[in-house]
Amino acid sequence: MRVKTFRGSSTAAVFADIKAEFGDNAIILSNKSVEEDGRKIHEIMVGVDGQEEAVPAQETRDEVIDAAMNNIPDWNQEWNQIKGHMMALLKPQMNLNLLAPRQRLALEYLEREGVENKVILDLFQQLRGDKSKAILPELEKIAPVRALDSKNWPQKFQALAGPHGAGKTSTIIRLALKEKKENPTARICLASADQGQGKGRLVLRHYADLSGLEFRELASREDFAKLIGESRKFDRVFIDLPGLGGNAELEGWLTACGMHGPCDLAVHLVLNPYYAPAQYTAFLKKFQSSKVKSLIWTKLDEACNYGALVNTSYESGLPVSLLSYGSGLRNSMQPACEKDFWRLVFKHQLPVQEKMNFAKAV
Ligand SMILES: Nc1nc2c(ncn2[C@@H]2O[C@H](COP(=O)(O)OP(=O)(O)O)[C@@H](O)[C@H]2O)c(=O)[nH]1
Ligand SMILES: [Mg+2]
Image 1 (cartoon, helix red, strand yellow):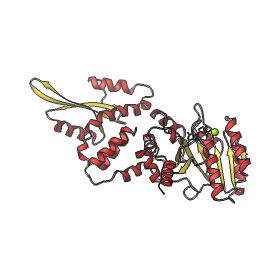
Image 2 (cartoon, rainbow, N blue to C red; image 1 turned 45 degrees about the horizontal axis):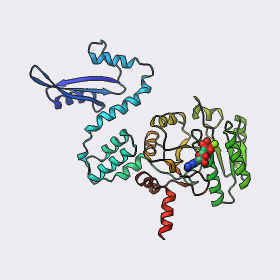
Image 3 (cartoon, helix red, strand yellow; image 1 turned 90 degrees about the vertical axis):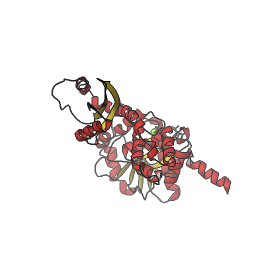
Image 4 (cartoon, rainbow, N blue to C red; image 1 turned 120 degrees about the vertical axis):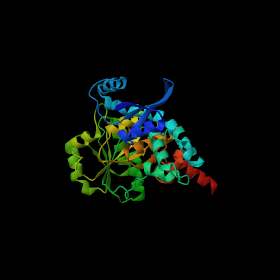
C-alpha cells in the first residue's frame, strides 16, 4: 500500500488532485482542515492498494511511514485487517440519504447481523441513486443459492470437506439416507477418507451396513484409484474427507490422492455459522480448490445471527447448497433454496420452523 497526503485550498481541489493521480483507486484515510498563516488548508490522506513506492527518497513523514510499512515481513497478510479498519473510516462517508428508507433499514439490519463493512459498502454502491431498487436481487448476486441435488450437482463423487467437528460425517449420512429414500434402487457408496477420526469412520460404516449401502475405506492413493476404477458400479459416491489439521491444504491433499485431475468430483465445504471472521478467511484459504463447488452450513440451530453466511459467499464466490439445523439425522437439513436462505438471514427462521408453523396453520 502507498500512503500519500494531498493539500489544497478547497476539498474539491484536493479531490481533483487525488483523482488525477490515482483515479478511483484511492481510499481516504483522513480528511481535515488546518489553519496556516490565517489561511484554511484542506489536507486529505489517501492509501492506494498494490502501489509500490514510487518516490525514491524518504523525504516526508508520510514517505518514511510508507517505507517502514512496506518493510514489514508478511505485510500482505496484514492487508486484509488494515482494509477492515479503512472500511470503518470510510463508512461515515456512506451517505445514507441516497437510499430509500427501506434500503437503509435493510443495510442497517445486515450490519447488526454481522455482515461485513465491505459487503455493506458494495450493496450501498449498487443501491445508491435508485430508491426503487430492491435489495434482495443484489443480495442474491452476492450469496447465490444452488440446492444440493443430483440435478444441480450431477458429479458421481460428492465429497464433503471442512474443519473437524463441522458436521461432515453427519451430513454425508443424511444425504445418503435421503438419496436412498427418494430413489431406493440407487447404488450408493459411502467412503471414508477420514482416517484420523476412528469414530466418524465407524459411524459411517455402521450406517452403510444398516441401510444396505456399500462402504469403502480410503487410506491411501491406491484406495482412491481402486474406487475410481470401480465407480461404474455406483450411481453416487459420498466421500467423507478429513479435517486437515496443521498446515495441510485441500488442493495439495486432493492432488496427493489422485483426485484432482479430471475425476467427476464436486467438493462441498461444510462450515458452522459462528466462527470468528479471521477463521473464515483461514478456512477459505485452507480449503481453496477448483473442486470446491458450494458451501454447506450446519449447526444453524446454534447460531444467534447469520451474517457469516453472506460474508463467506461474498469472500469465496461459492453458492450455498445445503442448510442443516439439528444434531439428529432426521428433519435436520434441507437443500438450500432462496426463500429458506433469506428467511434465515432476515427472520432467524430455520427451514424446519417454517414447515412446523405451516403445519400448525393448516
Ligand atoms: N446442533 C447441531 N449439531 C450438529 C449439526 N450437524 C452436525 N451436528 C453435530 O456436530 C457434531 C460433529 O458432527 P460430525 O458429523 O461428526 O462432524 P465432522 O467432524 O465434520 O465429521 C456431532 O455431534 C453432530 O451430531 C447441526 O446442524 N446442528
Ligand atoms: Mg467426521
